[in-house]
Image 1 (tube, rainbow, N blue to C red):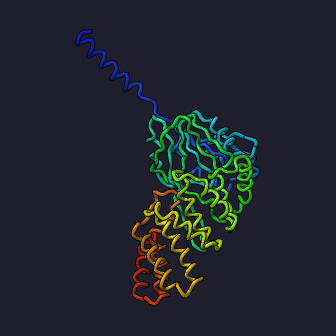
Image 2: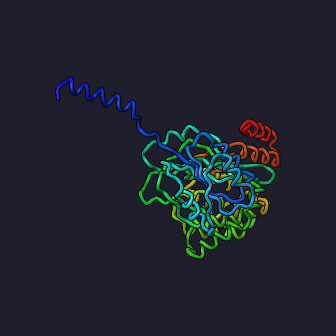
Image 3: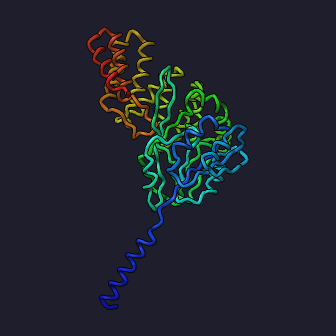
Length: 372
Protein backbone atom coordinates (compact mmCIF):
# COMPACT_ATOMS: atom_id res chain seq x y z
CA UNK A 1 0.00 0.00 0.00
CA UNK A 2 1.39 3.46 -0.90
CA UNK A 3 1.79 6.33 1.53
CA UNK A 4 -1.44 7.92 0.41
CA UNK A 5 -3.28 4.65 0.96
CA UNK A 6 -1.76 4.22 4.41
CA UNK A 7 -2.69 7.79 5.32
CA UNK A 8 -6.23 7.20 4.12
CA UNK A 9 -6.41 4.00 6.18
CA UNK A 10 -5.14 5.81 9.28
CA UNK A 11 -7.68 8.55 8.70
CA UNK A 12 -10.46 6.02 8.34
CA UNK A 13 -9.49 4.25 11.55
CA UNK A 14 -9.24 7.52 13.47
CA UNK A 15 -12.63 8.65 12.20
CA UNK A 16 -14.09 5.26 12.96
CA UNK A 17 -12.74 5.30 16.52
CA UNK A 18 -14.45 8.63 17.08
CA UNK A 19 -17.68 7.42 15.55
CA UNK A 20 -17.65 4.06 17.36
CA UNK A 21 -16.02 4.57 20.79
CA UNK A 22 -15.11 1.62 23.01
CA UNK A 23 -18.04 0.47 25.12
CA UNK A 24 -18.03 1.93 28.64
CA UNK A 25 -18.31 -0.86 31.23
CA UNK A 26 -21.71 -1.02 32.89
CA UNK A 27 -22.45 -1.55 36.56
CA UNK A 28 -25.57 -2.82 38.32
CA UNK A 29 -26.63 -2.65 41.95
CA UNK A 30 -27.72 -6.16 42.95
CA UNK A 31 -29.61 -6.73 46.21
CA UNK A 32 -31.60 -9.34 48.08
CA UNK A 33 -34.26 -7.99 50.45
CA UNK A 34 -37.07 -8.93 52.79
CA UNK A 35 -39.16 -6.41 54.76
CA UNK A 36 -36.63 -3.61 54.36
CA UNK A 37 -39.04 -0.67 54.08
CA UNK A 38 -37.32 1.17 56.95
CA UNK A 39 -33.92 1.45 55.25
CA UNK A 40 -34.24 0.60 51.55
CA UNK A 41 -34.90 4.15 50.29
CA UNK A 42 -31.72 5.40 51.98
CA UNK A 43 -29.69 2.71 50.22
CA UNK A 44 -31.22 3.23 46.79
CA UNK A 45 -31.05 7.02 46.91
CA UNK A 46 -27.33 6.81 47.75
CA UNK A 47 -26.55 5.04 44.46
CA UNK A 48 -29.24 6.47 42.19
CA UNK A 49 -27.66 7.98 39.09
CA UNK A 50 -24.36 6.19 39.68
CA UNK A 51 -25.34 2.72 38.42
CA UNK A 52 -26.86 1.58 35.13
CA UNK A 53 -29.32 -0.92 36.58
CA UNK A 54 -30.87 -1.77 39.94
CA UNK A 55 -31.85 -5.38 40.52
CA UNK A 56 -33.78 -6.23 43.69
CA UNK A 57 -34.59 -9.83 44.54
CA UNK A 58 -37.39 -9.99 47.10
CA UNK A 59 -37.56 -13.12 49.27
CA UNK A 60 -41.03 -12.63 50.71
CA UNK A 61 -41.65 -9.09 51.94
CA UNK A 62 -44.97 -8.24 53.55
CA UNK A 63 -44.28 -4.51 53.95
CA UNK A 64 -43.76 -1.81 51.27
CA UNK A 65 -40.30 -3.02 50.23
CA UNK A 66 -41.31 -3.89 46.67
CA UNK A 67 -43.13 -0.60 46.12
CA UNK A 68 -40.16 1.41 47.40
CA UNK A 69 -37.78 -0.48 45.10
CA UNK A 70 -40.02 0.06 42.09
CA UNK A 71 -40.25 3.75 42.95
CA UNK A 72 -36.49 3.98 42.38
CA UNK A 73 -36.76 2.25 39.03
CA UNK A 74 -35.50 -1.11 40.26
CA UNK A 75 -36.25 -4.32 38.40
CA UNK A 76 -37.86 -6.44 41.12
CA UNK A 77 -37.81 -10.24 40.99
CA UNK A 78 -39.11 -12.77 43.50
CA UNK A 79 -37.42 -15.78 45.04
CA UNK A 80 -38.57 -18.34 47.59
CA UNK A 81 -36.23 -18.30 50.60
CA UNK A 82 -34.33 -21.60 51.03
CA UNK A 83 -32.18 -20.82 54.11
CA UNK A 84 -29.19 -20.08 51.89
CA UNK A 85 -27.85 -16.59 51.23
CA UNK A 86 -25.65 -17.72 48.34
CA UNK A 87 -28.63 -19.26 46.57
CA UNK A 88 -30.47 -15.94 46.82
CA UNK A 89 -27.43 -13.82 45.86
CA UNK A 90 -26.76 -16.00 42.84
CA UNK A 91 -30.40 -15.90 41.77
CA UNK A 92 -30.23 -12.08 41.91
CA UNK A 93 -26.97 -12.03 39.94
CA UNK A 94 -28.56 -14.22 37.27
CA UNK A 95 -30.79 -11.25 36.39
CA UNK A 96 -27.81 -8.94 35.76
CA UNK A 97 -26.15 -8.50 32.37
CA UNK A 98 -23.83 -5.71 33.57
CA UNK A 99 -20.05 -5.91 33.34
CA UNK A 100 -19.77 -5.21 37.08
CA UNK A 101 -22.10 -5.86 40.01
CA UNK A 102 -22.19 -3.84 43.22
CA UNK A 103 -23.56 -5.92 46.10
CA UNK A 104 -25.26 -4.01 48.91
CA UNK A 105 -27.78 -4.84 51.61
CA UNK A 106 -30.67 -2.61 52.56
CA UNK A 107 -28.90 -1.47 55.74
CA UNK A 108 -25.96 -0.22 53.64
CA UNK A 109 -25.62 3.13 51.91
CA UNK A 110 -22.91 4.55 49.68
CA UNK A 111 -21.11 7.28 51.64
CA UNK A 112 -18.33 8.19 49.22
CA UNK A 113 -16.45 7.01 46.17
CA UNK A 114 -19.31 7.25 43.71
CA UNK A 115 -16.91 8.27 40.94
CA UNK A 116 -14.89 5.07 41.47
CA UNK A 117 -17.83 3.07 40.11
CA UNK A 118 -17.03 4.52 36.66
CA UNK A 119 -13.32 3.73 36.89
CA UNK A 120 -13.44 -0.03 37.23
CA UNK A 121 -12.16 -0.63 33.72
CA UNK A 122 -12.43 -3.78 31.65
CA UNK A 123 -9.97 -6.15 33.38
CA UNK A 124 -11.82 -8.35 35.91
CA UNK A 125 -10.90 -8.30 39.60
CA UNK A 126 -12.68 -8.67 42.94
CA UNK A 127 -13.30 -5.20 44.35
CA UNK A 128 -13.02 -4.62 48.10
CA UNK A 129 -14.72 -1.59 49.63
CA UNK A 130 -14.58 -0.05 53.10
CA UNK A 131 -17.72 -1.01 55.03
CA UNK A 132 -18.18 1.19 58.09
CA UNK A 133 -19.87 -1.02 60.69
CA UNK A 134 -21.51 1.12 63.36
CA UNK A 135 -22.33 -0.40 66.76
CA UNK A 136 -22.90 0.57 70.37
CA UNK A 137 -20.41 -0.18 73.13
CA UNK A 138 -21.75 0.91 76.45
CA UNK A 139 -23.48 4.21 75.76
CA UNK A 140 -21.12 5.25 72.99
CA UNK A 141 -21.33 4.66 69.26
CA UNK A 142 -18.23 3.05 67.79
CA UNK A 143 -17.31 1.81 64.35
CA UNK A 144 -14.97 -0.54 62.56
CA UNK A 145 -13.93 -0.55 58.92
CA UNK A 146 -14.31 -3.92 57.26
CA UNK A 147 -12.81 -4.47 53.82
CA UNK A 148 -15.53 -6.50 52.12
CA UNK A 149 -15.58 -7.92 48.59
CA UNK A 150 -18.68 -6.22 47.20
CA UNK A 151 -17.82 -5.42 43.56
CA UNK A 152 -17.82 -8.45 41.30
CA UNK A 153 -17.09 -8.80 37.58
CA UNK A 154 -19.71 -10.43 35.39
CA UNK A 155 -20.00 -14.17 35.97
CA UNK A 156 -18.68 -14.33 39.54
CA UNK A 157 -21.00 -16.07 41.99
CA UNK A 158 -21.22 -16.78 45.72
CA UNK A 159 -20.62 -19.84 47.90
CA UNK A 160 -21.69 -20.48 51.49
CA UNK A 161 -25.05 -20.74 53.24
CA UNK A 162 -24.40 -17.63 55.35
CA UNK A 163 -21.66 -14.98 55.47
CA UNK A 164 -21.27 -16.00 51.88
CA UNK A 165 -18.04 -15.35 50.02
CA UNK A 166 -17.37 -14.60 46.37
CA UNK A 167 -16.15 -17.78 44.68
CA UNK A 168 -12.96 -17.20 42.75
CA UNK A 169 -12.12 -20.22 40.56
CA UNK A 170 -10.40 -17.99 37.99
CA UNK A 171 -7.99 -16.59 40.56
CA UNK A 172 -8.91 -12.92 40.08
CA UNK A 173 -6.84 -10.50 42.14
CA UNK A 174 -8.46 -8.53 44.95
CA UNK A 175 -8.22 -4.76 44.80
CA UNK A 176 -9.11 -2.23 47.48
CA UNK A 177 -11.14 0.65 46.08
CA UNK A 178 -11.72 4.13 47.43
CA UNK A 179 -15.38 3.43 48.08
CA UNK A 180 -16.93 3.80 51.54
CA UNK A 181 -20.25 2.22 52.51
CA UNK A 182 -22.16 2.75 55.74
CA UNK A 183 -23.74 -0.11 57.67
CA UNK A 184 -25.93 0.20 60.76
CA UNK A 185 -27.23 -3.37 60.97
CA UNK A 186 -25.26 -3.85 64.22
CA UNK A 187 -27.07 -1.01 65.94
CA UNK A 188 -29.70 -2.12 68.50
CA UNK A 189 -32.70 -1.88 66.17
CA UNK A 190 -30.99 -3.92 63.47
CA UNK A 191 -29.83 -6.57 65.94
CA UNK A 192 -33.33 -6.95 67.34
CA UNK A 193 -34.76 -7.51 63.86
CA UNK A 194 -32.22 -10.24 63.02
CA UNK A 195 -32.03 -12.00 66.38
CA UNK A 196 -31.85 -15.78 65.98
CA UNK A 197 -31.84 -15.84 62.18
CA UNK A 198 -28.10 -15.88 61.58
CA UNK A 199 -27.37 -18.20 64.50
CA UNK A 200 -29.76 -20.81 63.13
CA UNK A 201 -28.18 -20.66 59.67
CA UNK A 202 -24.66 -20.80 61.08
CA UNK A 203 -25.51 -23.88 63.13
CA UNK A 204 -26.98 -25.52 60.02
CA UNK A 205 -23.78 -24.79 58.12
CA UNK A 206 -21.60 -26.07 60.98
CA UNK A 207 -23.59 -29.30 61.09
CA UNK A 208 -22.34 -29.85 57.53
CA UNK A 209 -18.72 -28.74 58.16
CA UNK A 210 -18.18 -28.73 61.95
CA UNK A 211 -14.47 -27.83 61.83
CA UNK A 212 -14.74 -24.82 59.55
CA UNK A 213 -12.87 -22.03 61.38
CA UNK A 214 -14.60 -19.27 59.41
CA UNK A 215 -18.05 -20.50 60.43
CA UNK A 216 -16.95 -20.89 64.06
CA UNK A 217 -15.59 -17.33 63.96
CA UNK A 218 -18.86 -16.03 62.53
CA UNK A 219 -20.91 -17.93 65.13
CA UNK A 220 -18.72 -16.44 67.85
CA UNK A 221 -19.36 -12.95 66.45
CA UNK A 222 -23.09 -13.62 66.35
CA UNK A 223 -23.24 -14.85 69.95
CA UNK A 224 -21.09 -11.95 71.20
CA UNK A 225 -23.46 -9.43 69.59
CA UNK A 226 -26.14 -10.65 72.01
CA UNK A 227 -23.79 -10.73 75.04
CA UNK A 228 -23.48 -14.52 75.12
CA UNK A 229 -19.79 -14.17 75.87
CA UNK A 230 -19.06 -17.63 77.34
CA UNK A 231 -20.46 -19.39 74.29
CA UNK A 232 -18.79 -16.91 71.96
CA UNK A 233 -15.41 -17.45 73.62
CA UNK A 234 -15.69 -21.22 73.09
CA UNK A 235 -16.42 -20.67 69.39
CA UNK A 236 -13.57 -18.21 68.98
CA UNK A 237 -11.02 -20.46 70.69
CA UNK A 238 -12.09 -23.41 68.54
CA UNK A 239 -11.68 -21.21 65.47
CA UNK A 240 -8.21 -20.08 66.62
CA UNK A 241 -7.08 -23.68 66.97
CA UNK A 242 -8.22 -24.48 63.42
CA UNK A 243 -7.36 -21.23 61.64
CA UNK A 244 -4.20 -20.89 59.57
CA UNK A 245 -2.13 -17.79 60.24
CA UNK A 246 -2.61 -16.51 56.69
CA UNK A 247 -6.41 -16.57 56.83
CA UNK A 248 -7.80 -13.13 56.07
CA UNK A 249 -10.13 -13.16 59.08
CA UNK A 250 -7.52 -14.24 61.66
CA UNK A 251 -6.73 -10.67 62.70
CA UNK A 252 -10.30 -9.93 63.71
CA UNK A 253 -10.65 -13.40 65.22
CA UNK A 254 -7.74 -12.81 67.61
CA UNK A 255 -8.93 -9.36 68.65
CA UNK A 256 -12.49 -10.55 69.25
CA UNK A 257 -11.17 -13.56 71.17
CA UNK A 258 -9.21 -11.33 73.56
CA UNK A 259 -12.14 -8.96 74.07
CA UNK A 260 -14.68 -11.76 74.55
CA UNK A 261 -12.50 -13.75 76.96
CA UNK A 262 -12.23 -10.58 79.03
CA UNK A 263 -15.99 -10.04 78.92
CA UNK A 264 -16.54 -13.65 79.99
CA UNK A 265 -14.09 -13.29 82.86
CA UNK A 266 -11.60 -15.82 81.47
CA UNK A 267 -8.62 -13.58 82.14
CA UNK A 268 -5.95 -16.27 82.45
CA UNK A 269 -6.88 -17.71 79.07
CA UNK A 270 -6.91 -14.22 77.58
CA UNK A 271 -3.40 -13.52 78.94
CA UNK A 272 -2.15 -16.84 77.55
CA UNK A 273 -3.61 -16.05 74.11
CA UNK A 274 -2.11 -12.55 74.22
CA UNK A 275 1.32 -14.03 74.94
CA UNK A 276 0.96 -16.55 72.11
CA UNK A 277 -0.03 -13.83 69.64
CA UNK A 278 2.43 -11.15 70.79
CA UNK A 279 4.97 -11.64 67.95
CA UNK A 280 2.37 -11.21 65.21
CA UNK A 281 0.56 -7.96 66.02
CA UNK A 282 3.24 -5.40 66.85
CA UNK A 283 1.65 -2.87 64.49
CA UNK A 284 -1.90 -3.30 65.75
CA UNK A 285 -3.55 -0.78 68.09
CA UNK A 286 -6.39 -3.26 68.61
CA UNK A 287 -4.02 -5.88 70.01
CA UNK A 288 -2.43 -3.56 72.56
CA UNK A 289 -5.79 -2.01 73.46
CA UNK A 290 -7.21 -5.46 74.24
CA UNK A 291 -4.08 -6.41 76.20
CA UNK A 292 -4.47 -3.27 78.32
CA UNK A 293 -8.13 -4.08 79.01
CA UNK A 294 -7.30 -7.65 80.06
CA UNK A 295 -4.47 -6.61 82.40
CA UNK A 296 -6.59 -3.82 83.90
CA UNK A 297 -9.18 -6.39 84.96
CA UNK A 298 -6.38 -8.64 86.21
CA UNK A 299 -4.96 -5.74 88.25
CA UNK A 300 -8.37 -5.10 89.82
CA UNK A 301 -8.54 -8.75 90.87
CA UNK A 302 -4.97 -8.70 92.24
CA UNK A 303 -4.64 -5.33 93.98
CA UNK A 304 -1.51 -6.24 95.95
CA UNK A 305 0.54 -6.59 92.76
CA UNK A 306 -1.40 -4.11 90.64
CA UNK A 307 0.79 -1.03 91.02
CA UNK A 308 4.12 -2.82 90.76
CA UNK A 309 3.33 -5.42 88.10
CA UNK A 310 0.11 -5.02 86.17
CA UNK A 311 -0.76 -1.33 85.84
CA UNK A 312 2.61 -0.62 84.13
CA UNK A 313 1.60 -3.17 81.46
CA UNK A 314 -1.75 -1.40 81.10
CA UNK A 315 -0.09 2.00 80.76
CA UNK A 316 2.57 0.87 78.30
CA UNK A 317 -0.04 -0.91 76.16
CA UNK A 318 -2.24 2.17 75.79
CA UNK A 319 0.84 4.28 75.07
CA UNK A 320 1.77 1.75 72.40
CA UNK A 321 -1.67 2.24 70.85
CA UNK A 322 -0.95 5.94 70.49
CA UNK A 323 2.50 5.26 69.11
CA UNK A 324 1.04 3.00 66.40
CA UNK A 325 -1.91 5.26 65.63
CA UNK A 326 -5.08 4.41 63.73
CA UNK A 327 -4.95 1.47 61.30
CA UNK A 328 -8.12 1.52 59.16
CA UNK A 329 -6.29 -0.69 56.66
CA UNK A 330 -6.58 -3.57 59.14
CA UNK A 331 -10.02 -5.00 58.46
CA UNK A 332 -12.34 -4.62 61.48
CA UNK A 333 -9.93 -2.40 63.42
CA UNK A 334 -11.99 -0.40 65.92
CA UNK A 335 -11.72 3.33 65.23
CA UNK A 336 -10.30 5.25 68.18
CA UNK A 337 -8.15 2.51 69.66
CA UNK A 338 -5.10 4.11 68.09
CA UNK A 339 -6.11 7.61 69.18
CA UNK A 340 -8.78 9.11 71.45
CA UNK A 341 -9.98 5.91 73.17
CA UNK A 342 -6.45 5.05 74.28
CA UNK A 343 -5.81 8.66 75.33
CA UNK A 344 -8.98 8.94 77.41
CA UNK A 345 -8.25 5.61 79.10
CA UNK A 346 -4.76 6.85 79.98
CA UNK A 347 -6.31 10.02 81.42
CA UNK A 348 -8.53 7.91 83.70
CA UNK A 349 -5.59 5.70 84.71
CA UNK A 350 -3.43 8.71 85.60
CA UNK A 351 -6.31 10.35 87.49
CA UNK A 352 -6.84 7.23 89.59
CA UNK A 353 -3.15 6.79 90.35
CA UNK A 354 -2.57 10.36 91.53
CA UNK A 355 -0.90 11.77 88.41
CA UNK A 356 -3.07 14.82 87.85
CA UNK A 357 -0.82 16.64 85.37
CA UNK A 358 -0.59 13.60 83.09
CA UNK A 359 -4.33 13.04 83.43
CA UNK A 360 -5.01 16.59 82.23
CA UNK A 361 -2.53 16.19 79.37
CA UNK A 362 -4.19 13.04 78.06
CA UNK A 363 -7.71 14.41 78.50
CA UNK A 364 -6.67 17.25 76.20
CA UNK A 365 -5.14 14.80 73.75
CA UNK A 366 -8.31 12.70 73.71
CA UNK A 367 -10.45 15.78 73.00
CA UNK A 368 -8.16 16.83 70.17
CA UNK A 369 -8.12 13.36 68.63
CA UNK A 370 -11.85 12.66 68.83
CA UNK A 371 -13.55 13.06 65.42
CA UNK A 372 -15.94 15.96 65.13
